[in-house]
Image (tube, rainbow, N blue to C red; front, side):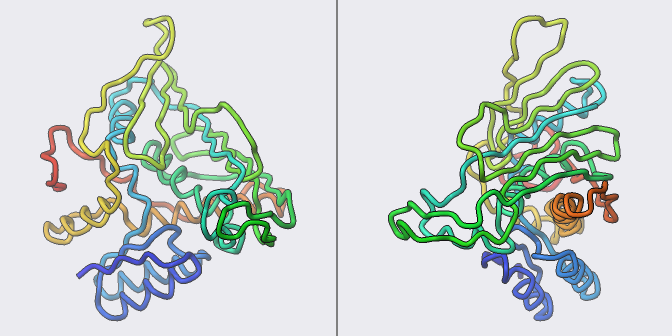
Length: 303
């Protein structure tokens, strides 16, 4: 049996640990936990009980990010050397029916949206090595303008603007901005730059495209790439399905807790680097998730 943990961030670790203690595999909403200690305890408990622990997001299993992984693996842009990752808006208080928790510990742009971006980058480039960052809490409170809480003051407990650089073990240097303080911008969600060309990666909070490439010999503008895999539509819970297939076949599951823990450490490193004024050398590592094979039958997630 697999327990799917869809509680609020502050309850993720408690509920996941209870499921594991009851002898059940567990797949949690992101992030894995509020703290690195919580994340480690989940991984250790799962290992001790010979159970599976997994965590969202699973959007990297969609057609868009799987196609990008194939292009990188096939050398379409050469060796990845740099890139950008931008998630910038002005927060959810204008549209979300319950926006307060987004500004509490466990929320903020980094822990709400950062998991999509960090997980996508690990999927595409492998594990990271270090983080150098500056973070800020621009407003002490926000004003809700959603219908349900119009005019309410929302105390801000977390950083709402995160700017930094992640160095990956493969040498790629990625410039990152994750913010709830920006009214408008025109950056792509993720772009990767290699020795032979460039790649536009789709929004990692979605499963489809567009995917675009540029190589100097083609000239002109970016070129659209046809998606090579299934699951371009909204396929949330595909990570749970992958875990179920993995349990039956004995292979590793792709949305593994160690992947989520590595993403969690990267996210925590932004505030830590900002507070100390130093580059944070990451202590964790994880396996780069295995990509889907080409030609896989839709609905069958084993190789």
